[in-house]
Length: 108
Image (cartoon, rainbow, N blue to C red; front, side, top):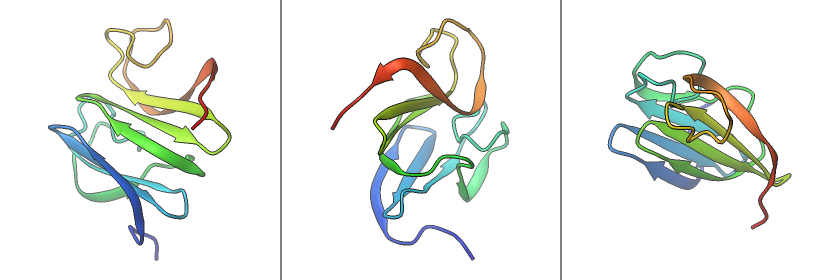
């Protein structure tokens, strides 16, 4: 049985929250009209759900309608509302699952 165990970091916006487990898995809950929970839906969640396909996360940020995660390999991933290009690509759409920002690495 999965779930939030030992939380390494939490991030929250006015509408959704993220919890990073010490094992590098990410969990999300709250309002989800822009897919900012990263679970492939736009369904609101009252309890934490895993962000599928995203492991080895070391840091997270919850924006008002989008989310970002930094992985241990220095890649940055983003999902949610992209109507103003806040996901770091040229497209303008809602991304309900994490997508890697290409051409960018971030080191802690």
